[in-house]
Length: 343
Image (cartoon, rainbow, N blue to C red):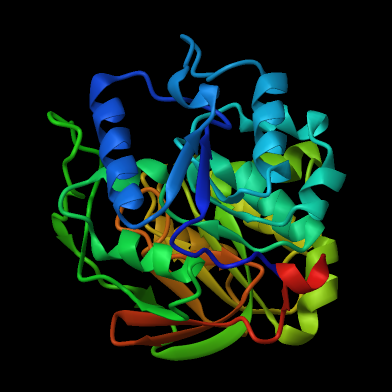
């Protein structure tokens, strides 16, 4: 696994819209505040044109332009990390147009969540470059800054190797008036487990289950190679949903099992679902679909659509230490190749 070069205070951070861009005034205000905050710490921000574009269907711009911007950020040696400005529904259109040799030749941190699973999962599972499933760029624009966002940046800077779960979380989306609003933390955060306290280690891989289901159905990404390469380290899957029903959740987990994606699994972690429907609750449906497994399964994790978000680093060797509703994630980057050594 290649760990991209850690950031320093004078590096450039690139931003683009792999799916939807931002056009609302509140989002622009949040973006500008995010830039001010990071620039005050010495970073420079480079926003591609797609960042501020979005058509009626939710596309920032044609797929070939998005790919061109992405590859330009990758090739430019001044840019050391790439953030998505938003999620959406159309990142999948980029896949057949990307020159994957460019991706492999220019390993850089890439971060986002939701639909950004498309690129993050593919880059890590098939090209052995670590990526980060966590907040999109505009999270830096909130006031005050939540510790989850600050800690996420510290991972990219190489200043942090572990993170503790949060005390509260948002139960859903809330309207913005100024654009600078912080996360609405209106519910206590208690991670769950059907097997009590647990500690497990493995290579972390996963993302938004809606996208994982699409990968399985369309055959557009394969995690089996990743599983086979790293199974001696153990494999830890994390999954969270945007909008799925009980049957789709069951079918996705069954298909993952049938494809061998769950081979070597040492633990599974499920985030808080945003939109879910079914005769059984989400946790019950997952537990039933995975019944008989001999590895721990954690629920209601700080990952995905219900903020705040911990930094789930795809490809990294991670240890989850769960006890009495709280969890700490620790990463060991020492066992992997740093990007500067690989080039």
